[in-house]
Image (spheres, rainbow, N blue to C red):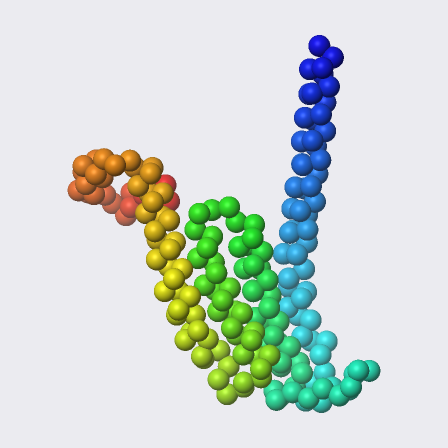
Length: 177
């Protein structure tokens, strides 16, 4: 009997350390989400001139001021960070489609850092289309395989379900089941 007690104590201590680790990771995620408004409004601490004198040298920007540049930058980085957090913590089968807005914000940050002021937030769609051509069919294929596995190979019951008249509420319920 003492061996069984030792095993149960080992399992309990292992599950406690796993629970503490999950609690710690969850706490870090909560803090990152909670500070996101403060990170966004950090643009207000940047100078309102185009030239910024720092101890490391002089910085110049093509924008109206460094505050405007920071407003654009933090307006892209904060949603990008939240989307990355969502992508890496999501356990749903469809989480790969989150890569599309992640790519969009990444290209926008890249364009902003290049300071292409004339074409800001305009050309990124051209770069995202090839990614979408790969990701959207991939996610739909995964969905179709899961749907097929859940339904089985019985297509007649599926066709009968399609023939049934359903109201708006029934159709919405079917979307989320």
